[in-house]
Amino acid sequence: MARLLYVTPQAPSLRTGGGRHCYANLRALCGTPGTDVSYVGPPIDEQLEGLEGLSQLVARPYVRRDKLHAAVTGAATSLVGLFRDWRRNGPREFDLGFFETTKLGFAISHFAGHLKTVCSVHNVETDFMQGARGFSRLAAHNARRSEHEVLRRCDHLLVMHEHDLARLKRVYGMPALDARASLHPVCAVPSLEPLPYESRKRRIVIPGSLDQAYNESGIRAFLTECGPSLKDLNVELVVAGRNPRPVLRNSVHHAGGILIENPASMAEIVRDARIVLVPDMGGAGMKLRVAEALSLGVPVVGTREALLGYVEANEFGRVVASISELTGSIREIMQNPALGGALARRAREVWDARYSFDAFSFRIRGWLPTWLG
Image 1 (cartoon, one colour):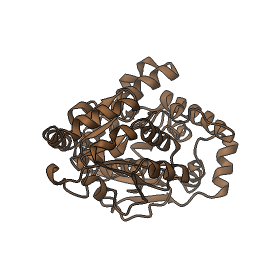
Image 2 (image 1 turned 45 degrees about the vertical axis):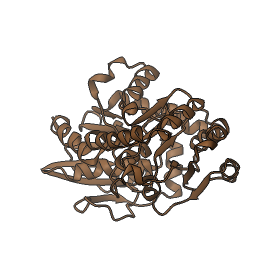
Image 3 (image 1 turned 60 degrees about the vertical axis):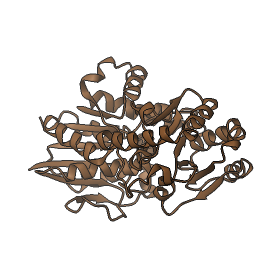
Image 4 (image 1 turned 180 degrees about the horizontal axis):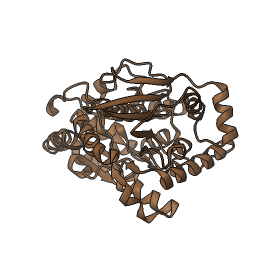
């Protein structure tokens, strides 16, 4: 029996993109025959399939002392407090440590030389936190220092795509990272089957966490630059997601779009679309909402930053260099139902081959013997 320690600063969850990636990793580890997985992290407050045998060593909410300990030690996450609790309670012996995100440099340093370690890189933290101000600058400094420590000491790295791997090598001056890195893109677990393309509404959906500044800025830029020139297409433009600010509400209303706040089922909204649009102006990691659209057989149109890691982007949709170029791709698909149907079918095929949970867990199970040595 292989004894695995799983450590995460973010609880596995179906509510957020990062949480879903954590859940997929943990579920794949727990579902691998011959493994016994133990958990250190925030409490898992959802009923998640495939985690029934998980042993939760430390699973509690963050408290003030965790943040103080992180501030004093310069850790990039308050998980350092939970990790300290686990060490005090007497660590068990393990064969492998699996760590979510490069913010866990303190934990990987603790095990360096004593335990084989794997880190799942969610994004290049130093890129993700660019432009930080005020106290956020200190958080960005700590995240970068932690990321550097992980890259130096971790035995195996799971990086979402070639772009992030190239950034890590360049930013930290580590050209030999390829020897320890494997490409590990996101996955989406579909809750619904695709609708026939011809029966769908003439709908374009922009999904996402609308309270995130980088999502909001891209959507507002699209509405300003492209919205007026698409009015003659007679399409329903839907912006859907979590907690939009008033400024975004006003932008969507002014553009004649429909805003759906905190939808009960994003899949129901996306499933009936002819295009999912991702107008991001910055990129790090991978956009899980793209994989979710593919699982529902919906073509995706987006910027290069939005489609980082999706090497087949022009097979299931269109990738463009700038927001202003989105108009042409939208017109091409909306005015040609045969093309839209072909892209929709290919979207589902690409998801099944590369971004389904079956493909995701197959990779984990294949790598595990190598990680264990």
